[in-house]
Image (cartoon, rainbow over all chains, first blue to last red; front, side):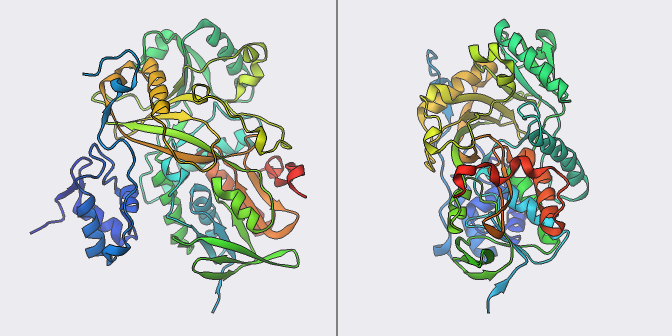
Length: 92
Length: 408
């Protein structure tokens, strides 16, 4: 049993109801849902919630899975410490 | 049957969306054609700043001030989304006495224009933002500068426009402009043809390509900004936007008026080849924006590389190097996302607003390097121009006619 209060994006604490609301308002891609709700903008950058949001777009938005464009994945794949980018700093 | 509209706006970024709102309040039949989604490009990924300190005297400053007033009104009376509008001010920090001397003279000039900015001493600077590096000896501070969430602002404009009956066709690409006897009669899109007497080119960094469909040359070029965002900081900064570490050149010391703006200024008759190509080290302009969510948005580069959206590890490294010189605490966090976007660049750093004599019904609303600072005022003035030919701002300064050699 899934309820409206459950967190779909744990990093940004976005609930299922907010995502469904965004989809009903016409956000029919992962990027559009992200822009409206912040789902996928947190520390894991959508690695956890991507599939769940896709499924909601299919179920609630009525979009076919094949028509769903892949999300824009931006580097880095995993968070990188700022220290590792700075000259003369030891990476912990 | 062909679709019909009174005005077709090409581009669903902040300029297209705000113009749709300003027009839809006045007339019906407003249609926005957007090749991707609302705010998919620069409007969804820029810094979300309403600047005053970087404005040029004249229309530029006038539009920013009016936009600032209008945002407050829009936030309280029109928008149904919280756009995270915060007027907490912006600071340009400096580390050397030499830089301070130049910035003092710059601020004097800005005060003459009525910009509410002042130089603050070390004590007040660190009081305003305690996370700053101890080496920072002062700053210019403009408490009226504001920040907002650019994505939500663009969406809020689009939703307000829709409430007034405007239609947004997303995922629809304009492929041609139909003309007859020197006037616009319609646009061709990937989803069919639309009949219309007015076409507004609000395609931002892609405006040149849209103008070419009407056989017009518009010197608006993509300028790449690389950016990154960190995870939220444990202890948040005070939401003031920081700029700094800028090298003050000998030329600026001799002619402080040249330091008045960060803008690159070239003659309007310059051509593509005049766009500066410099080593990456010289293209870094440190910028830090603490967002409401606690993440720090950090920029930026300013490069001319066409529409290449690449992010360079070297650029990230250079930007972070400069950023930790301003806020050392950033060393303790990680970067979670990087991106590049394109803001439109014009030779005199002013947008291009108005009609073109060659084609009746074709209006340009593009070339905003600081679109968030200008959108509400631009939209009102252009809506007035379309509806009754009486814009309440002197748009002549931004007229397309200033690019003489580009109009053959």
